[in-house]
Amino acid sequence: MTPGDWRPRVTGAAVPSGAPGSRSERRALGRGTVAVRLYLPEGEAADAVDELLAQAVLAEEVGFDGVAFGEHHAGFASYVPSPTLAAAWVLDATARIWSGAMPALLPLRPANLLVEEVAWLGRRHPGRVALGVAPGSLAVDFEVAEVPFEERYRRFAGALPGVVSTLSGQEPGALGGDAAVAACGADPIPVVVAAQTPAAVRRAAEAGAGVLLDLLSDPDRLAALSEEYRRAGGPGPLALIRHVRIGAPAEELDRRQYDLYRSYSAGNVQASWTSDQELILRDPSELADQLAGLVRRLDLDALDLKISVPGQPSADVREQIDVIGREVLPDLRARAWA
Image 1 (cartoon, rainbow, N blue to C red):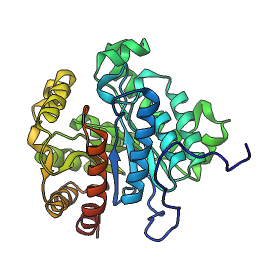
Image 2 (image 1 turned 135 degrees about the vertical axis):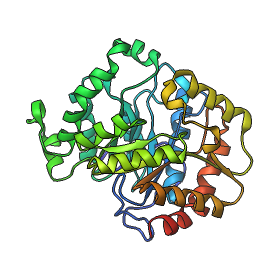
Image 3 (image 1 turned 90 degrees about the vertical axis):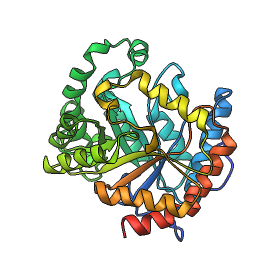
């Protein structure tokens, strides 16, 4: 095999970088970027990866700027166990969009090893890699990693400043001899923290990280967190996850997903959750308007749109990617960041 012979096992053609309308200047988590959050489809592992990549290629074709992955283990709720690995699949199968863990569970592994992986992925795909991190909240993830669950917050707080400073090129620490890490000085990789409390957004600001706001908190709480983050000197990016859908709701699947989140999230955070934060509308223009309103109210730099839930047929997921990309994103960008 000669260089250039390899092709990903996906259908559809990626948009060449720099092609008309490709928005190749949009860097990972840059202002005005919109990502789609993907999950492993049900079925055999090889087929699931092929379908995941087909969805990512379609997302690029219809105008999304990125593909985001969360992390859980042991087959939990269709999450990928290694979002950085999944991001590498997507980046090699596409030409323009960014990808990354949104978030990776930072306490589960030595922080420097995660930094090395992300830094080298960033060198392979400059400007197309981001990293989100979180302390974790699901006990099975820590059982799989053989890390004490009760240590998660201490480990997270201890590791966060070094991850941010190293990937921003400020202080490589023990990784000073790594070529990819050294290159972060000229081409930093953005880091965001999944934050749901005032203390968490202040911690992110102090570390120089951005913030990834959760998908179910009501706008009043999110506005307070955004203001607290900016007041603490947070440099951004500030991003929000939202569950969206065009058409009729998948009521049973959505209810099951909502109950799943409640089964392992902290009660003080759940107090601000309402299932009606899901934006399920029949009119693409109305969805664009509601999302744009959130962007303006919260002073968001980026959006991360969740368009599927476990058990949703792959054909339906592709349909949602297509209609939101083609019919919602152009209006959204014009109304939110123009």
